[in-house]
Image 1 (cartoon, rainbow, N blue to C red):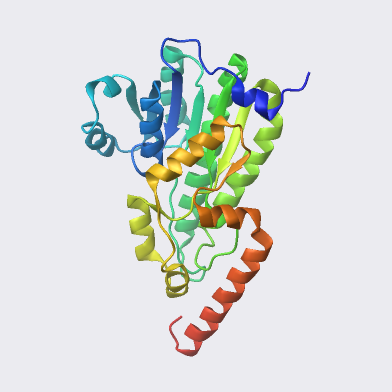
Image 2 (cartoon, rainbow, N blue to C red; image 1 turned 90 degrees about the horizontal axis):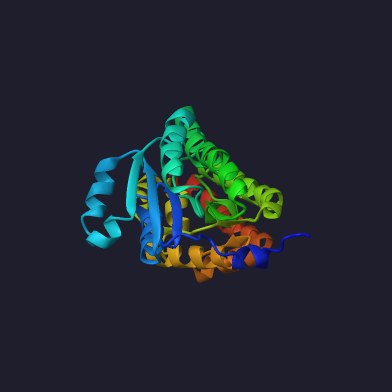
Length: 285
């Protein structure tokens, strides 16, 4: 008998005294940290996988003792399978198959294609796509064995259209979208719900750095966009995953873009084309 999306969404996630066990890569900052907080307050034990323990410790000091008891950290680089496997294996051996796996680790380094060094393309591809794939490859078999789980892949609104200056970032997030859609088909019969998220510009430390690197066309085109809070993005992503949705586009503007991608992408490309022509005439690019 086929397992429907609704059935997967309703399936109880854990029989433990706590709500269950969640793994969040890139969970020490931004949307990842906001997701961790929501899961912790819902009773989950949460494992954060990230490269920097210092950021995690600073965040951890703001939490109550009760939440800290259910929050753990393993230092690992999602780009390095051996490092990631060691961190995940030790946690899964202690707590069992994860009920949630959320892949938030990512990096954005915008710039014109003609200006971006190959190293920037490589780090965004290996972090955003291969880091996601590495995490899923190590966790999915455990979730399948348990016959349950929610897998959430964090893509980006940049995977919904065409954006000047994002020739390295957008392809890596398009790939995450494709991976999520295929995993949803393949894992649903095993009781695994897969949701891909497309957050827009969000108020995070990474976004502050990204804005400083935007080339003039991107900076002008994206100037004035509504900036989503990390908390709102996290709440919408978790709620959609709990409903078993295939996609979630947090924020009103991103929802519209997801619903009408061909029309809005055509409009956005026309607007950016005009900016390119204007700036080229002014020798600004």
